[in-house]
Length: 464
Image (cartoon, rainbow, N blue to C red):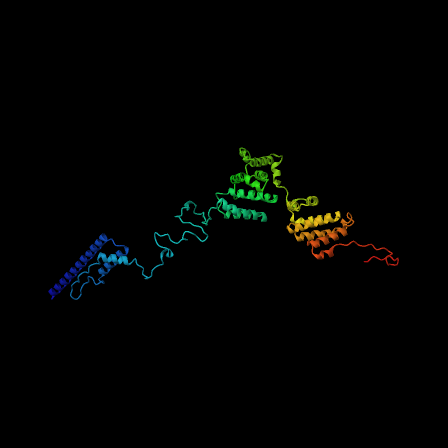
């Protein structure tokens, strides 16, 4: 009995020893296979983790691999590890999206790698760009931004002459230099800035002295903003070359150009050596222009006086000066009977708001003269002035009402003033100068009453 028991224990120990040796051999085989896979294929990290997990399952006997058969006492055959190709496919599948959805197209549908992208990809909302591939990009100045704006085509000298003339004539009406600057900045005139001075001076030559003064002020305003000394010098040179043609329309063009040159020197927009640098010119008109400028610059306190080189214009003149000019104008007209000359002299005074004084002096002259011939000639002049729109209707009515109000003082020098004024107003109404209701507004001389005229010798009490 004891021998049977001993034999049974020897059998069990040999079986356990055999099974343990099988497990050791299988673990070694698994490690060798894992080493071969790691050396030969070198799968990615996820594949390595899967290989380790499979090895752990086989070692525990849960993966259908090598386990001990407790009934028969025999061990099952070990299962081989996955092939390297299968591990590679498993690692590639792990990189795919697990959601099953596709992402949005790159660049919002404007192409992927190696494409230009959208047209506005390099711009921000305010028009700035920070594209490192842009030729104007500077990595050292990343904080600074630059704006991409559209530019107009380059204007030719002929095109600018047409557009600039309208701009400068509008400036003579509104006298706003800032608007001129904005208009010039909108034009592409980077290479023809000297044309600004040439066109401005040419247009101002055909205007009156007040507009020439505005032109000089505009040149001083644009200096440093649109033009520089070189542009002004080139522009004046161009005008000097055109003096032969300009003298046909403006006979005093050389003197006007000389005034512009001297004024630019006084305003520090032109160097003083400009005149001395042009002494080699041979043209008659060019020499006269330079002599005029040199004369103005060499006179005593010349730079200070050049501020009024164009004279005092318009309402800046004293009232008595304007009144005397109008009286002289009317007396010259009575002797020459030249209506056009009278209109020209009145316009040169540049006081359209003061033309009622001209009407007043004309009526007073008729009342003081007292002759019918003088009244007829003056009525024709006023009618011509109204037709030419030199004296508007409101100025005409204002002038005649001033005569009505001052008639009590006028009669001291002209005793027949009431009678003469009544006849002259009637004549003007017939010519269409005054409306018919003006006749009722003409003052009448008060008739003196004596004691003997129907009062019975009683003295009449004055009315309150």
